[in-house]
Image 1 (tube, rainbow, N blue to C red):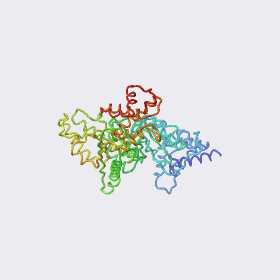
Image 2 (image 1 turned 90 degrees about the horizontal axis):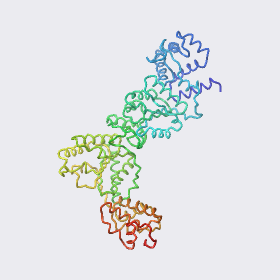
Image 3 (image 1 turned 60 degrees about the vertical axis):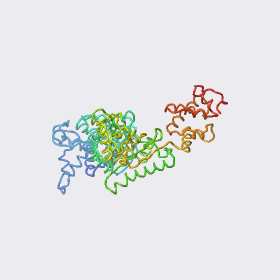
Image 4 (image 1 turned 135 degrees about the vertical axis):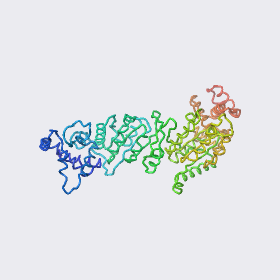
Length: 565
């Protein structure tokens, strides 16, 4: 392949990848010829009064426009698009232009030469070819390292060389745009690391980058700690926001999102992935951290009648969230109240509901919102509601009686407590998301709250068949074994949480003693679990396992096999 054929091939690829117009293609071709043909370059240099090499005068280019054209505007748009991509330099365009003298002229930048094949680039042999425009993707929410790893899964080799932003003006912006063009044309994708310029001093650089490089048929990803300052620009360029589940090292922001922009993003579906957290770009926060759940509906081990109530609640939630807004024209949300003793599965039920609805989950941490200052608690609660609502999350109020307590029940709160309850009443009325409140003290809830909930489900202590299944599943036994599940399930009406704790401890003791899991291990472990919850342990001493259970509780793990019943 001769050099001109090589240039022509790379020109076609660049035009296709960056979605350039035919006029922009022609300008690039002319400038490439200036670089390729020495006689043409010399002729242009002599014609330039300031003896600038490789420069094509704007006047010379404009004079090539057919006389039938009534305006130079299409050519101006084509040239500006190339400059926005950083492929050409318009000499004299910016006050900081290093070549100050002379009239306006054009010349290829280093990025333009690489894309055109006029400089070596190490281009991949085969790149995905597409003529469909692809928008920017904005990954955020987690640590820089975690986000970069996510882009590798999204782009493959196109994420091999992230472009790091730096504080600067027009020159830095041109460099970034040019580097994005180079990566798109040579690697098939581009990743821009926006963490260094996410501070207030350089935030204007990123929206300009998105705008200038908004048209391309290859994927582009920008990673940010939080996208609050970029959300308006995302709407303007049609960028896709994608919230990545944050790791423990994720940076957290205290920003509360503007509901108007959130609603517009949801309407335009400017998101990627599951749930509105992806659409609206909700940041992590010190007050509330949205997280994706993987608790499946099948993981809930409940009696048949209770499971049916939970399934009815899920169907009710889906109807209110997906169907009712289309009929009424407004979002009403869904509120579920779960009551039951500790360990009966209230929190797990909330997580399963979030998974079934394909929504992230936000848990309200009372320690972050309760304040001794009048009005401060309500303010912090409002921010948690705003974050959960913007994220489209399932908001979980554990121990709801702490916030929804009866106004006449005392507690030393005085007038401040009444104010807090009144605020929660009005906030629940306005909340358009999904809320799950859990409590084991239903009698302490203010009566005014009950009508605010769309469903109320009581999670009781599991019945005997359910307890037997829980023991079998959590002890991880199958088929023939030395554990009397019938006697354990029948004699001990306890919650799933207690069963889980006792099962883990029994397996740990048996493994530590290098013995098979047997009934005495389970009974002795259950005694410790009952003691921990201030309950009587008399019933664990049951024949024929009494002696073995006593020895285990006294610390004698090494006993004869004959003592195990």
